[in-house]
Length: 114
Image (cartoon, rainbow, N blue to C red):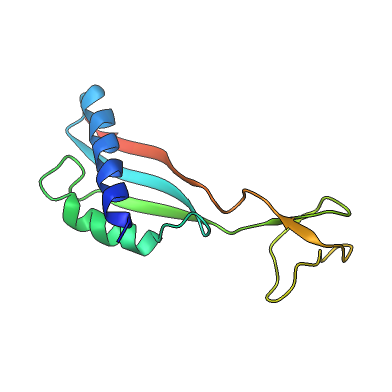
């Protein structure tokens, strides 16, 4: 449910960008969404389709690039995706620690039509 207000903000930002550049409408929006960001891409897409009706974003496509979380090895520094029930580095076997990778949430690009 918390995807509703964030989707409203995405539409507001895209419309502001389009208006500033004198566009007739928004063609596409590319989002980067980390798996640990707390947002679900499918829900954003669902809300976008409904909320964008009657706006410059109506009919725009939303491309969502998922970012999988990564851990950093305390031994060798390798970044790796954690295996189920394991925190061990696949390269050296040392313990991994959490990173910020996978918590991303931002608009990467907005394509407009003039």
